[in-house]
Length: 157
Image 1 (cartoon, rainbow, N blue to C red):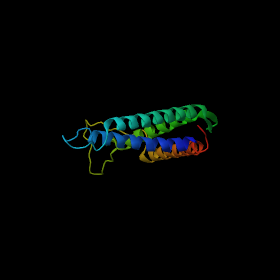
Image 2 (spheres, rainbow, N blue to C red):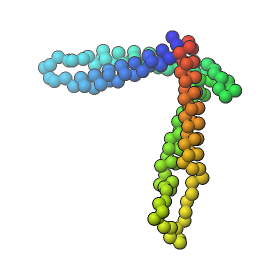
Image 3 (cartoon, helix red, strand yellow):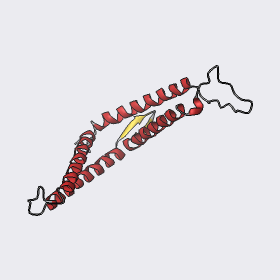
Image 4 (cartoon, rainbow, N blue to C red):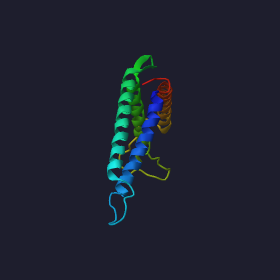
């Protein structure tokens, strides 16, 4: 099984787990004198099987991510490190979005007058410079994510 297949299987198993838990919760109480819609113990056994398979798949994926290497920016890095780098890039992009929407980044109109005691705050980067930085980070994130995805579909676990 390839990493990509295992990831798809984990998604299916997570959905199955949620559905089984909902069913168990919904059918826990039974109206007196009525038959059970679902047997708690059978659902519990099925939940345990799904959780065990999910745990085993996650461990296999983790091992593969730690033991599979890709070439990135002239370095050999593990898939695990690449995934962390992608997360870091997403965080940086979110931070830059927040900077861009900061109220101090406002544009004064010609009619706005500064009082003599008011302090003027100027951004260290223009919006255009921030946009360029965000484009660069987004391109880097996309390229690395694509490399990880393609590697996932070639790598056996």
